[in-house]
Length: 196
Image (cartoon, rainbow, N blue to C red; front, side):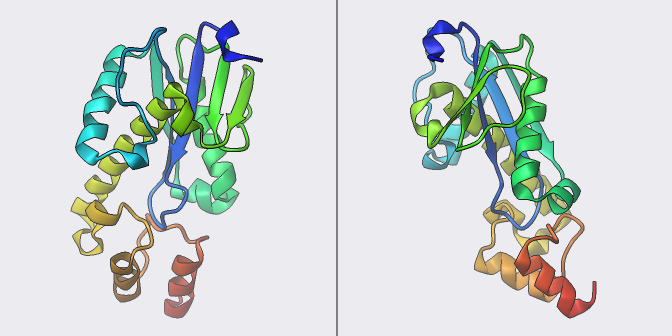
């Protein structure tokens, strides 16, 4: 199933499996052939300003793109892996036109209505997956910065919900918020200690 046989190939990736707070976000992107966007790479390897520039360029030039999320409640009830799959499935379903093939970052694929192939570290080798990782990261970072305005004492604008020392201290001092993932052990232990 070589991708060159397909005209519409979507890249799918997610961000936010590791954080203790906020949703997991996925994006799906179909790039034009040939794709003239320069500098596509794994979103984690790019500076924030570069990601934001590329995010706009991808939105302007993509054949189709979609961003979707799975909520904290879904993460806690399904587990993070299944919630990630759900977010990727939601993003892929929103694409118009639908792709003929999806390339998914990682070692497993969500259930989709079209053929899909998992590629480990695909965000480093496939432009369409890199594009999806950039859209997902820029979207989720903006979401966490909005949450920072609601809960400034937690510093979500800096750590984006990941378990940094600052975040863990705030969690112990302030207690868990509604946006915290209670199925994750640092949050669960704070909730157990406080009886929340």
